[in-house]
Length: 475
Image (cartoon, rainbow, N blue to C red):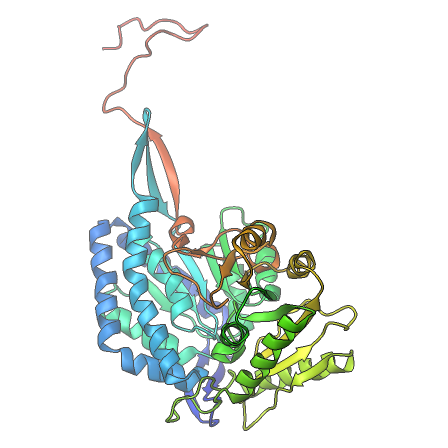
C-alpha cells in the first residue's frame, strides 16, 4: 500500500509545523507486533522500576516544559499561558497516577483469596487535538505503570506534539517499543481497531468516532474500551447570583481554549426575568472584550485560533444554520484570518427542534426558561452527559441539580471547564461508557486475578458427598 504523507499546519499563520508519513495497515500491524514483544519484559519489571521511569519522565517534562509548550502553541493554536498550563498538568499527572495505582490496584487479601492485578498487554491510546499532551498522557502514564505497552495514535492535527513527547519518554529511559507513536488519520485508526492483538482502546474524541470504535470491537469481548466523547453541556445560572461574577464564569466556561474543550458550556440556561437579563447583558459585554489573537502575541490573548481553517468554517456554518432556524444573534461570531473566530452568543429559545450536537468552538446557545424545574428539564434535554453546572442558586437547589441532572462532571459556582486530576473524569450517554479517566484510569489499565493458594496440596477437611476418602491420608 502506498504511504500517504501529511503535514500539520500552524492555524495562526499557515506555516508547516510537522510533516511525515501516515502508517499503513501493514505498518500498524508491525508496530503492534513490536509493542507485544516489548511488553512482556516491561511487565515483568518490578512496579518500583516502572515507577522510576515514569518519575524520570516528569523530571524531563519539567526541564523541557518551555519547548513542549511552544510546540503545542504552534501546532494547535493555544495561547502560551494555556500551553504552559497543559504541560504542568502533564507533570502533575505522574504523581496522581502513581497514587491511584497503589490505592486501586495493589494486591489485597480477602478471606482465603488473594487478588493481584495484571496488565492487558498492548493497548492503544487515541489522542485528541484540543489537549494533545495532557489527555493522551492521562491514559499513557497509568497504562505504562500497570505494565502495558502503548500504541499512541495522536490526532492528525497534533503529530509534532506526539513525536516530541515520545522523545521525552526515550530520554527518561523508557525501553524501546514500549511506547510507539503511530501517525495517521482515519485509515490508520481503523487499522489499529481492526488488529485483534490490541487488548484495550482508550479514546478521546467525537461521539461518532467513539461509536465506530465500539461497533468494530463488538466481536472482541477480550478488549476493554474507555471512551470519552464530548458533550452538549448545560450551564444553568439562577438567582440569587451576582450578574457580573456569573457572567465571568460563563465566559470562561464557554470560550476558554476557543471553545475547544469537551467540558465547555454549550447551552446557557437562564431565567426569563430581570435577573437573567442582567447576566446576559454582562456576558455579552465581557465576551465582546475578550482578546483574540495569535498564540504567541504579547500581550497574550485569552483565545487563540481554532485548530484549523476547516474547524473555524464549521463554527460559522453552525451559527448561520441556527440563525436560519430562528436564533437571535446577541453577539455574532466572526471569522478573522485563517482559523481565528471571535466569541458568538445566540438566543435559541424559540428555535424548534434545536440540534442536539456539540459545536466545537466559541459559540454559546442561550435558552430562557420560566422555572428552576424547567431549567433542570432543559439541562437533561440531551443525549450527552459529560459536564453540567449551576452558578448561583441555593444549597437546596444545588442538591436537586446534582441529583437530578445526568452528567459525569457536575460543578457549582465554578467554571464548567474545571476538573480535577484527583477525581474521575468521564460522562454518560453519548459522552462515555462508564469508564472515567482521571484518577480512575487505573481501573481500566489492568484487570484483577483472584487466587486461593497453598504452598503444598492440602487434603479436604472431609470428602464431599460421593467422593472416596484419601487412602494415604494425603501424604
